[in-house]
Figure 1 (cartoon, helix red, strand yellow):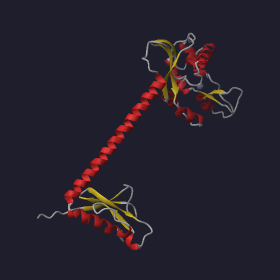
Figure 2: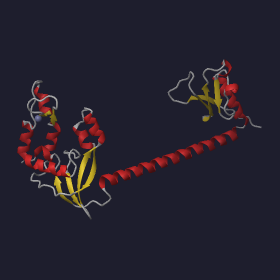
Figure 3: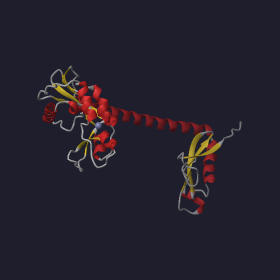
Figure 4: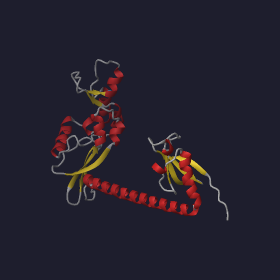
Length: 282
Ligand SMILES: [Zn+2]
């Protein structure tokens, strides 16, 4: 008969624990065979419990120390290590299978919700050719009359306040309908802004989702060209509103006002930098 020796080590249920009355784990040759835990207000002789090959030992079968609680499990393990290893492997395989099944269910549910979300946002029909585009930042450099026309067209479709002005708006001809394709700021970024958090220009640019809605009324004619040259200017010289403090003009250039050094006045938007940039490329 060969004699097998074991290396028993103690670990912790939570890797941040370092001992005391925390839940312990019993390892034999690096394999988890059971654990120990503190039983609280019990007679001194049963304050520690353990579980593992010997079953659940607590209460009447409890122990005065963690060492004793561990030893009972290790002793039982040593009577038939191969069998306990086999049971342990079986239990671990069951756990892994459960986990894999749970993960698969989770993935399937996520995919289903994603598909539902895409359908809700983008419709069930195929994209078609673009027949009209309102350039990004149009409202910041187009003639006021044209901006008003785009605005009332959006409002007619119930899209007032829904469309990001920092992205293009398109009209797309599809098989059985014409649609407006637009970027809508996510609820999260709108909430953040409503809560007074400072959403950066990059934040506004990125936190959008594409939506599609059926076109009912033809869009107004756009006379101004796309002006990508203005995007960096607008990124820096942003119009900001002062809803509570009205200096006689409540839309200011965030950049120029901040740099003016005068805390008692605001630089109105469009500022000189913006106006010069718009005229230069026109
Ligand atoms: Zn400015």
